Each structure stands twice: as structure tokens, then as C-alpha cells.
Image 1 (tube, rainbow, N blue to C red):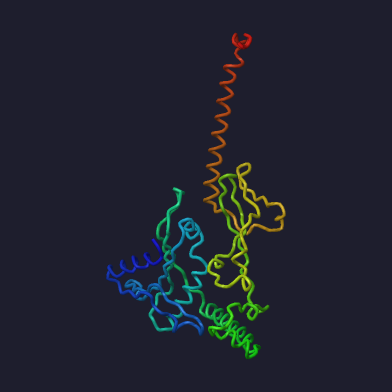
Image 2 (tube, helix red, strand yellow):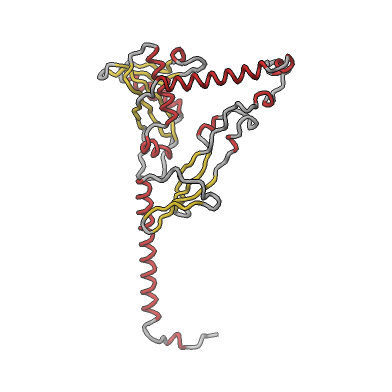
Length: 303
């Protein structure tokens, strides 16, 4: 299912249940200046005596294990917290907390993985923290834009006015040292079936796939990925081995204990299977080759 289909399905389900339910709620009036947002769903919980904020997030099936292991994603907690405080400031009687409903878009080949819609309950971050960060970012954007516009000549102001005859390449105006640095790459763990190790890679931050800016302003879309090391199964345990030239890049991530145990069982089973084949092959060779002189072997080869 696509995100839109999931939203429609869950909305119809809530309406069909008879619950008091609001869909696509505009929370912009409760957010700090310069920000806007729409909550996916707000429904009445009779037992708790208040409305519950819910956000629907589609996710790849392969990502569900990380949600189950670590809980709701950080960026979703920040978004949900902002929406919760906005609704609270709009005087909606809310339950203290919100839900993020993760909706997998596909199944996986791993039989022991739980791939089904999963609800994660979250506590909102403090209002001063969330709104403070939002206000600081809006203020920084305004100061940056005002400084750039105020420093332009009349001709340059025309160039950024959006008129039909204005040029489209304006990076020379907006590319300054005051731009926030592009998001650093993050470490991720991946199972490498060919080498039977857990690869540790530096990959672009998740937000890079949504970056709307040209590479002159932000090159996060061209960062790429590369391996910095791996966890290898040696003598019954997993040990990290850095890749050459990446010895100074310390691993900040590691496989989950569940993944370690699972892959260890597979490797132990494969090792025993190999030992059995070698043992069986050796016994057969001994029975046919070491039982005494062979008449066929002593005969000259036919030509």
C-alpha cells in the first residue's frame, strides 16, 4: 500500500468504528511563526477521557526491525511533539502522549521478522525545547535572507524578484558561509551474505533524499556510501575489524543481539555441515584407497 492508501484505509476504519475522529487537522495556528503542519489523525479515547494525536508513517519492511528495536524514529518524535504542543495550545483536550503508526510497504525474505503495522507510543518532548529550536531556525533563516536581500543592488533585486526575465541560477547570491553545513553521513550496519560479516558503512543522512537544493548550495545528494569496516564471527564471538585507511573511524553502531545470535547460528550450522562433509569424504577415501593394493591400480593403463 502507498501512504495515501494507508491513510484512507485507517481513516475509514476509525470512522467505521464509530470513534470521534478528525482527519488532516491543520495545526499551523498553534505552531511558532514560519512553520506549518497537518496532523494525520486525532481521535477520542473514551477510556482516557481525551483526544489522541496519531501520525501515520509508511516505511520499508526492512526498516521495521529497527523501529521494534529502538522505538519511534527521532525525527518523528520531534514532529509529533511539535504537533502535540500546537494542538494543546489550540485548547484541544489531549491525552499526554501521542502515537506513531508505522505501516510497512513490503514484506521481507527474513522469516523471523515481524512485518506488520506497529504502533509506537511516545511522550512529547518539552515545549520550550521543541518550539525553541523551531523559533531559532526561523529567526536564522530570516536574518540570512534579510542580509542577502539588503546587500543587493537594484539590478540584483530584480534578478531575485521572480520576474519572467530574471535568471534562474541565483546560487552566487545565496551561497555564503552562513548556510548551515550539509548533514554529515551516518553509520549503518548491513549483513553481507557473500562474506558472512556485518558491514559498517557511512551512508547519507536520511534527509538527503528530500533535499531540494542544487549541489552548489548543498552537496548532500552526492555524498555516496562506503564501507569503513565489519563485524566478523571469530571463535564464537563477533569482533570489529576496521577497513584499511579507516582505522581512526570508530564504529558507533553494531548489530542487534538478535541479529548476532541469528547469524551466529547460521554460521555454526554451516561450519558443522562442512566438517561433516569433510569427515564423510575422508572415510570414503580411506575405505577405497587404504584397504590394500588394488589390482586395477597395478594394471597398466590401456591405450
